[in-house]
Image 1 (cartoon, rainbow, N blue to C red):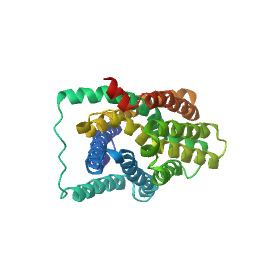
Image 2: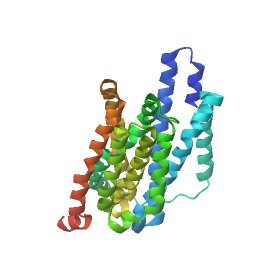
Image 3: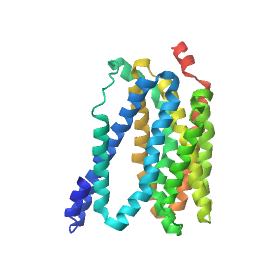
Image 4: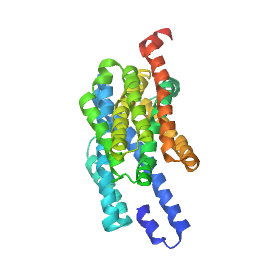
Amino acid sequence: MLYLVSLLAVGQPLLSISILIVGRVLLGGAESFIMIGAQSWCLSLGGAGNVGKMIAWIGTAMFMALALGAPLGSALLVHFGFASIGWATLIGAVGTWLLVVSIPATHPAPQSRKATGHVLKAVWIPGLAMAFSSVGYGIMTAFGVLLFVEQGWQPAWLSFTAFAVALMTARVFFGPLPDRLGGARTAMVFVVIQSAGLALIWLSPYAWLAFAGSAMAGFGYALVYPGLGIEAVARAPADARGLAMGVYTAFIDLALGLLAPLLGLLASGIGLSRIFLITALLALCTVPIATWLRTHPARALATAQ
């Protein structure tokens, strides 16, 4: 709704942009709660043995929407103007509300303050690893299209759609891997693929190679999130899995909220393409943390404690 209201003040750019930013803040906060709510809901229904698969499928649904939303948003903007973006966002939210409002709620077990403190202590290491990896996702979302437009690689929206489609493909065909091989081991392998894709975008002199890099980055990122998510949930109390996923996801938001804007400021000085190289190197910081997680499994830590 605020997107639409911002158009009423389009003659006053500062006011219009301020309204639009408030709309973005509300949208971002709401999306965070929707994601955590959906994950907690599925954890309660699916059980501990399907954590990786559950996280993968939730993410697949989200990225399917993103993959379709990029070309749809571009078409709406070209043919119907920015107001159509506001209406599409509003209608989507109402549709979601109608879908879930009549479904009986699942009621998680009460959580003590002690459990909350334990979760925070248990989840921060896999959360930190995920933060390093998620900077790449944030850069693809915020700057991928800008880089492709700057380089004349068209259609620019295909950069993020390739990322999202490759991510969905990886999760459809390889979604069970974190549950089978272990979350940390899976994250170690796939974050290297993600980093290679980001570096390929930086190196690429051709559009097709840059699109391939986008797809590689999405394919790699696909199983880093569920892999490290398994590690986060395994280290938390059994009755606080929803809280564990909430804290774990907060590390992603922290990375996107702090590092992505800082890299955006840096891009004005060193260029957009070099930001993808920096992001590729940051993603590789996940590897030593995942190695530590693998050599310090949750059961061993629980026994030591």
